[in-house]
Image (cartoon, rainbow, N blue to C red; front, side, top):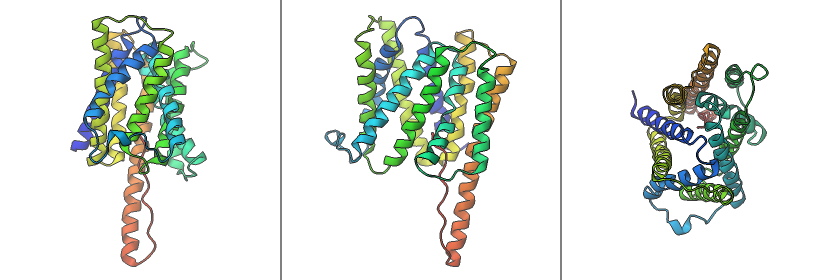
Length: 308
């Protein structure tokens, strides 16, 4: 197995560990308190791994300030919503809905970035949506606000990713990390003023675990993308659904029924198929471009791999 894929599996597994710990705060702490302290500790690993050549005093010298501020709003909204989903609905259901993000990214790539999306991707993201509907089964069971929060989280995550694609290469990495951290702390901190509860040392350690798992996972997935193609890394995120089912059943007595398992399988397979198809098109486009270049013909742009 390629080292980049191993790194990616480790990264998404760490994310899942943090999410499982988040669920342990159900009925104990509010989502804003969880978000504030978890994001505070999550800043530690990236801060220690500052990109070479970038200085902290330049972190807020932005080329596209409005876009990065807007991304900060979307990012903190997504984080708050998915935290609420984790503490109110089963982990597997929260993850399945969160994996609607590629669907919304595809829609935004057409509406905002004016990209042409092949029919195969529409088919696969449509199947992913069908899988989520099988898991959640609206109209056949009662929906909780956590389900709607997970949908909003997916929408905001897609918007955040789309903005990141626009500013990629034009902003310092440190600026992107710093702006996200500021919004996460400020967004949760403002509402925390009205809902703060004293926390025990045990709870503080769990919050530290959430943050450190997330911060380290972020660095590992960046390393994975440096040594492996995005289309190899992207499918590994679906290991989170396996962890969600495992953690949910082991620690929180959440057991998906047979129909729910079928829906989860559809979500996973359609997501992997999307990434695999995109990778295949990229390789074909790259080889065709190389062939035409040798012939002296026009070069074709290699198709971009799936976003994470």
